Amino acid sequence: MSEDRPQYQRDTVPTNAEIAERLRQMSVQMLSLGIDMEYAGGFGPLAEKGQMMAEQAEIALSWAHEIEGEAK
Figure: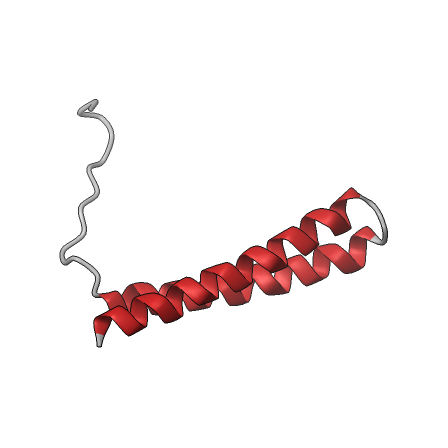
């Protein structure tokens, strides 16, 4: 890598619980944005993409539950 770019490193490795929480937070944002896209898009392509995003948010939430279950 080029020396002029800053090098980013995490201090610690995230726990499964932390990853699950981040996925949960992301899924809430994805669902909210997807719903907004559906509303603004009416019956057009934007609405279709919003519906897909909302569906993907549910998948991310299910991953969070799975990861949290693995941590126990």
